[in-house]
Image (cartoon, rainbow, N blue to C red; front, side, top):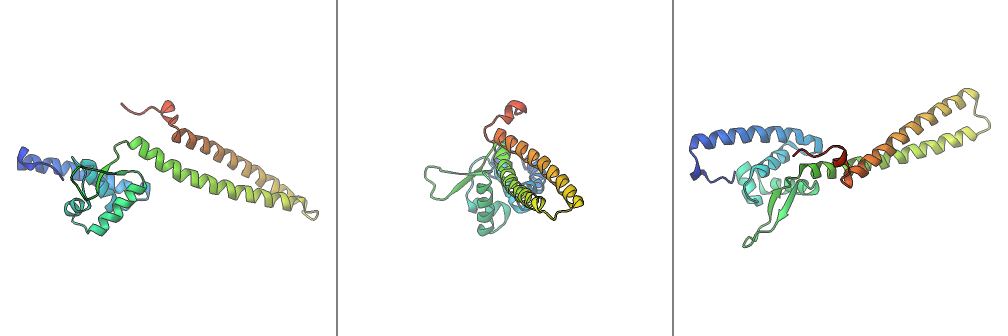
Amino acid sequence: MGLDQNQWSEEEHDVVQRIRKRVIEVVGRNMELYGVTLSTGHLYGLLFFADKPMTLDDMGREMQMSKTSMSTGVRTLLDLKMVNKVWEKGSRKDLYEVEYDWYQTFTDYFATQWRRAVESNLQALRRAMKEIDRLAEQPDTGGFVAGVLRADREKIRQAESYYKWLDRLIDAMEDGEIFDLVPREP
């Protein structure tokens, strides 16, 4: 994994590789949280422990996967802002390194995902509220139905309140205020 094996014994190398492999496996499995496949999670783990930026060829050799698979995985990680493309003097190939600011990666990813969900849900709630209002205004809406509509309107208002709160939480994540409330670990 990009390590100078001349600087340590084979036994030391094996121990370090075993430890790293265990971490990479766990990180890979937990990357499902980000909607990432196990192999892409393993790729992230490989880059995390790499001591220098890697090319797709380097990654393919280490993971014994095709360049196409590496390219797909890297593109996914780039889109999630978990990996950065870097430039290195003298290299004509694209090089990649992991984004070590996990706090920023988390806030970028979840702010984007949650914002999309909030907007979609608020739009559906507003549409439902209009339909309820239109139905409630009908002269032939009976007392029982009117009561159900009032109850539903209140449930929708509570849901809207939650989504507005979640929207403020997302704002706090995007502008970094979240770290004033829950500081980063030193």
